[in-house]
Length: 317
Image 1 (tube, rainbow, N blue to C red):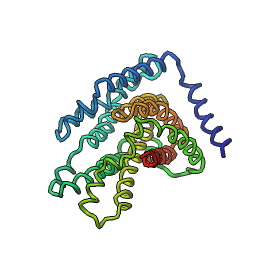
Image 2: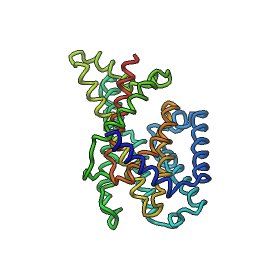
Image 3: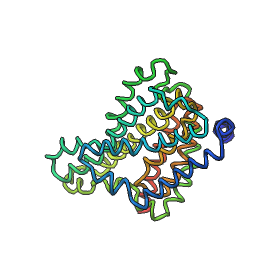
Image 4: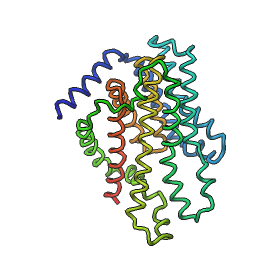
């Protein structure tokens, strides 16, 4: 198992590097990502500025620009180095920018649940909204994206943005998850991480349970973690699915690179170490997704890592 995993992943990685690696271009992209990370964590840009518009329709525009900026910026860097140039004048590229990032911005700015459930008692309201904010992506992003797929990709490979289950073998990813668990266990001793996890402790479940003493805690825990985990299915579909497979027509296999920068932006607001690791993790998962033509490996690992972070966060309390 170990040999198979290493050979397969390594062969994907080496093949991609041989075709795409340009140290100058990679250096410029890396510097761009580093500058963006520094600016965000110095100014607390997403949490203090963008999130201050929560409940306002203008937040959709903020989120659209926030996630479009790194993708288009890295596309321009690729263009500047003469790798892929057709995307700049491609209607297909800009249509998918509007559709994909429009749905992502809609999901990240949606506040309808707060209005619909505002009459609930405060303890129930807070917990339910926290859970629905994680699960909403399945409704607001995944379903619309799959419905639009036949229209956007009518003359492309029919792999459902990587959701085809064909030939997916979860066993190799169990090994990768085991390796990840070791690093997560070590990282859980860092105060920055164990102050952030488990997310369940910030869900308002304790207040909900106080108001509903007949409810066993395992039910609130299970409900929250299922909602929390469902969010990562959407993340993989968008980042390892849509942002790679939808843009291969215009960016070719270079589509992995702007995806990585955009994925880093998604982690702004989380611990700095997690944001930095997302750059490397996103790059590797992007290469695996591109070569295997499916995103189930990424979903398996992402869900596993998310729940392991929760578990180790619990153990550190």
